[in-house]
Image (cartoon, rainbow, N blue to C red; front, side, top):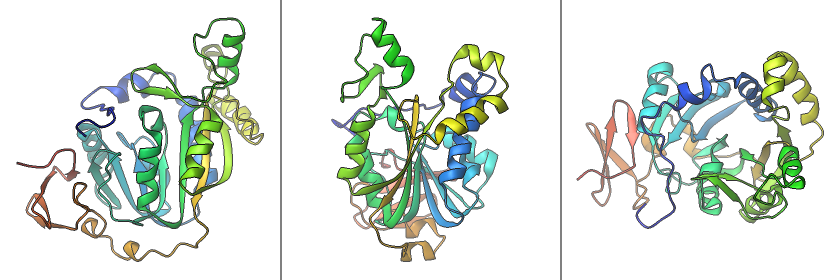
Length: 298
């Protein structure tokens, strides 16, 4: 988006290997799946995974008939597609500030380990709200700036930023931590009802992770999650948009063209080979099974 918010693009980075595989984060991975199992409904029709990346947790959405993976990185999505295939899955490379979906296309959306890469939180959450149906569920995870470790570091003068102030802190480029009250205000302003708060990853300390088995760490974490205390490094919000029960005619079809829209004109698309064409002639590519809405074709 020219002149708009900055975009975090993992591109063809080695994020999967450098951050997850064999990097000592099995505890965090297990805990995040644990929380999702608590918050996801027993059945659903169409789920949007915002910032799906290489599909680390996508298999947790097996209760949904259709799952749409959205990420700005074409390369990460391509890896996910090669691993999981096309049955139930649709892959969309797009800017989350300008999502290419029709209103009310999804009955659920998730955003896990993603929103900390967005400098305009209201804008991206508004995009999620727009493509959810009335009564749609939204599971949002965010990095908490006011966790126990940051408070202790601030107490002893080791933090240069204040964990108690409401504004987000950008501790690395396009890496933000958020105050719980700040995030609560943002979601409620957009009409989301907070149904549940789950604090997670309480034991994210190198010494503990090296000395205790993942099963023990995740077991302790599951107990602490029940407290609802917003003092952990990671916080999950279970949200609902409005009070209506789920009723979405867009979910009656499994064809991607029924929910995809041109992000520039918001008009329907027709497919011509490996090109999607909007009503006003804007063209988008379909490359190796990935719908690419990052830049229109010439």
